[in-house]
Amino acid sequence: MSTGDAAQRLGLSTRQVRKLVVAGAIKEAARGVLDATSVDHYAAIDRSGTKAWAPETAWAAVALLAGLDAPWLGRDQTARLRRRLRDVTPEQLVERARDRATVVHYSAHRSVLPRIGAQIARPPREALGLAATMDGSTDGYLAAASLDRIVRDNALKEDPDGNLTLRATAVEIDAIETLVATDVLAALDLAASLDTRERYVALTYLREALARRRP
Image 1 (tube, helix red, strand yellow):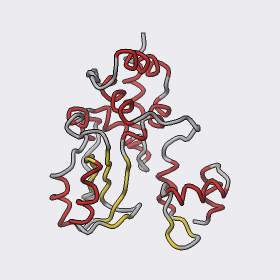
Image 2 (cartoon, rainbow, N blue to C red; image 1 turned 120 degrees about the vertical axis):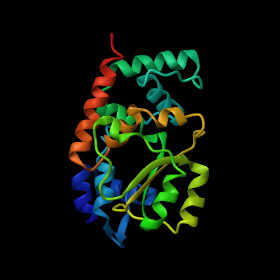
Image 3 (spheres, rainbow, N blue to C red; image 1 turned 90 degrees about the vertical axis):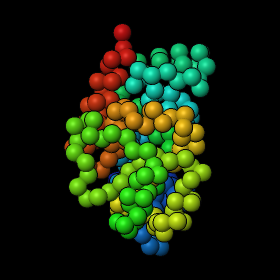
Image 4 (cartoon, rainbow, N blue to C red; image 1 turned 120 degrees about the horizontal axis):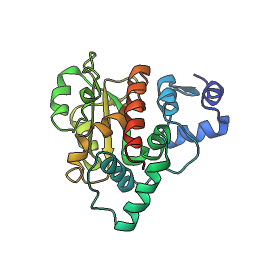
């Protein structure tokens, strides 16, 4: 895909697209040629220009929507977040909570996927009524400090079409272990899926979760 085609797809200028490439948000397939799947991944999250929440706030939103506490936020911060959650749409929630982790797609040999799967925390997509992936792909969270080691030990290569998605978070993984097991987090992840059905199911779930927070 050319820079011009990507700009048209995303509703941006070619200069803005080039900045995204430099920042690593969009990958190059070759010099001057952009990886179309990486453009699709970027486009899967609405980009209104609203600043993303800090990771701690994003994880607190997951907690509150799951009916859990977020003790790492102060009382005033929690109250403000509760008010925000009454007003956002599912698409806005996905956009604002996007910095809860850095998402990187990799190509991994099938033999290493079980080992990697045992080292990451995977949200329960089945809880949303979605079957386990049929292509053997793996998707989960890990501490950002562990990412380089897992990539190195398993000879992983970045690949937007890859069979492994790692979501590296700077928040202590032990602190959010309970949150990773929630339907809310599974829905947030799948709301940015390239699969139309997964995206629809996830956004429907988030719409209902947000409605339960409103008076």
